[in-house]
Image 1 (cartoon, one colour):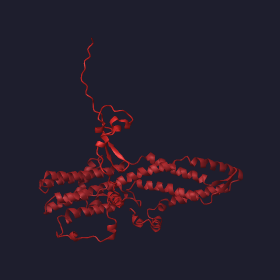
Image 2 (tube, one colour; image 1 turned 90 degrees about the vertical axis):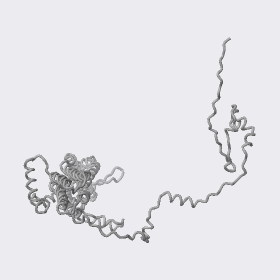
Image 3 (cartoon, one colour; image 1 turned 180 degrees about the horizontal axis):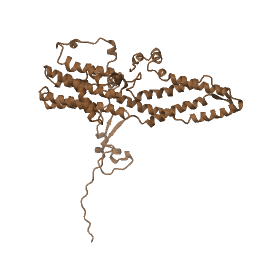
Length: 442
């Protein structure tokens, strides 16, 4: 059963973190406690053998320890395990998104299959039952828990998802076509029943029939994808490589973690025998915990604590389907005037957390800035610049006039006391028009 713990992390307080760390169900401690005990037993066994060896053999053993210590750093456990976890987690969530929730289809059946008599009611209920039956037929073949609940087709008859006649028909078709996976057969029955409802005018138009059939086919495709996820797994070689890498790393640590050398300076070293492998246990918790997480997420239809609770999903889907197409169909509370016209929120938290556009904050900041208007000066006519000899001959720009009217090209407007702006300084020159001249050679 999936374990929910987000209610304990509603705040970032230390107490909430402590409550999460000490949970046992679906925890890392429950997943690796057996491997941890085995690792400690092997570690102390190797350490005991090392202590009882003679001095010459201890020297040889220290050389072996140094060799294992150098080799343990060559195993890329972090890279391989991290990449594997990423792929497994993405696949795990994709599988969950393919789990069937028939609410959308049931709402369309309740709306498009009309009629208030007993026949129309049985058509709607039978369509809902066929959809859920097809889902259970798929899930009982890929989930251990669902298989234990419905070990045979007779248990589906007892649960009310299948009739005796339907069971015999299903067995007959299965025996006749042994190579075909017959989970789609209830889907075929539901399509035929929808066509029958159209002929009986319970579905008014062909367009409505098309919508119903399309939704039924979408359910079939969704169940087919779940079957494919169970059929096509991650490559076995990839899983084996990751598992061998993790276990090989800790096997080398059983030898390399027995003796710790400390640099004392001047080339001197001191050898310390590790009594409690604290850092080894921390590494073991990280790497073995991640490996166990990946192994649990490879098959989310298993019996682990964090696997999908498919039995609950089946019960929920059956009840919701019958509620939509039968019990709650056509029922509507009395339509009255609502009270939202006089509703005025007095909640201080709502007013404090209201939406404020980002640009409005900039406007508020700009309103706080005091803008001083520029000093007004008397306007100077343009004839003043036309009479200027500097502008007339163009020497203000360090060049001589080239014959075009400078006073019409440069216009000035005073902006402040010591600055003015030029207009038309980059205005393109007018093209000169030349008359065609013919040279005659005499």
